[in-house]
Length: 200
Image (cartoon, rainbow, N blue to C red; front, side):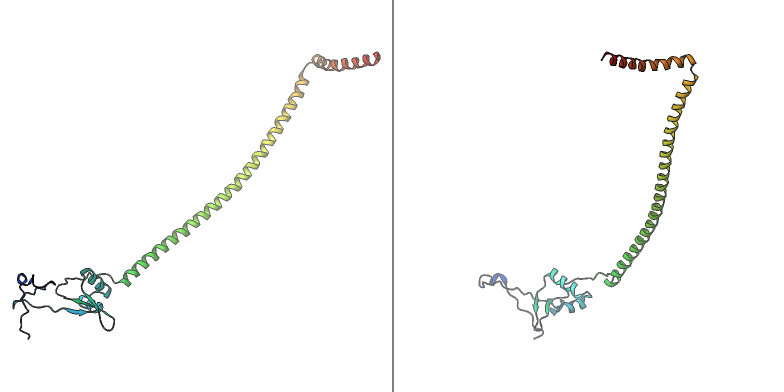
């Protein structure tokens, strides 16, 4: 009968009589409304709550709602929708969010590519400057070595000319004395050699 109230069990009287735990059922007043317990699949639960089936599955796990398998192999969840207070969070659709991320990444890649091209152009300009300066330095070094060799030769020639000039500027007597002084040791050695031959 539809108007029949549920059975009321007095727990204090029946506790010792039954070994198994007794389910206590309380009577409902006329003001209270009974929310039916429904068996829903994840997809149906998601439609009722305006969420995806994956979110419905996560919600069932979080609330630890009883589940069972139907004859066709689908999972059925025993749920009282009045007990579940779920308000879906409004999110940007995955496709749109993914598209925004991809667009942002593409723009970043284009910016980095432009900066890389600019840096390569600057580096090539610096490379040309570097090669030009290396060539200029090599030329200057060759000229410096040539000038150094010419300077050494000029100094040697100047020293030789200075020696000749100093000889020419001396008085004739001094030059004669120097010549005799240089010739005396040679003459003495010649005399010694002659004496040595005669003595033999």
